[in-house]
Every structure is written in structure tokens, then in C-alpha cells.
Image (cartoon, rainbow, N blue to C red; front, side):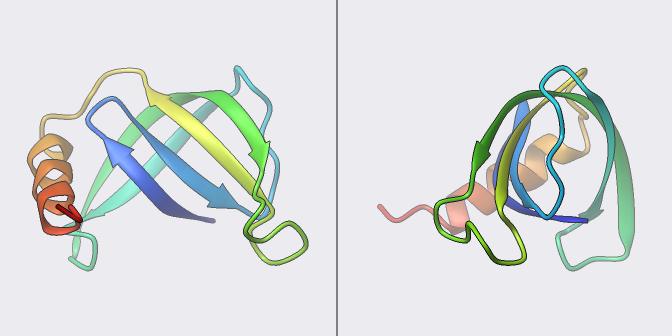
Length: 89
């Protein structure tokens, strides 16, 4: 279980309770839209693991960057729409 912090068509940054190793292969499932009822499965590779300085001793102590093995065409427009909605500019 993890929470998405940042996403792009190429990958995702999550905060998680468990540490994953760099190079590990992971399978992820996303709800589309984020609160929707449709799910999309994506495979990726862990490319970076850091301590989560915002929650080092809490529920989400790790920040994990995952690169998608192949960007999913269903996720791309959803991610782009969310980025525009949450863009501070």
C-alpha cells in the first residue's frame, strides 16, 4: 500500500510504509480517475529510494521513485489532466 505523490506518463513517486530495493520490479494498480471505479495495471522498476523527511517515523517513512516499464496510454491523459488541475501557476 502506498500513496502517490507525483506522477508523469513515465513514472510515479510514492510514499510507502515498506522499503523497496532499487532495481526491484513492481506491479501497480491505479484507479481512473483517482477516485473512480476503473483500474489500470502497470509494471515498473524502482529507480530511487529515500527517507521521507516529511514523515520519517510515521506511516509513510519512504519515498520511492518508480519508472514505468511501458507508459500506459490510458494513464497518460489522466495524469496530464491532474497536472493541469493541480498546477500552482
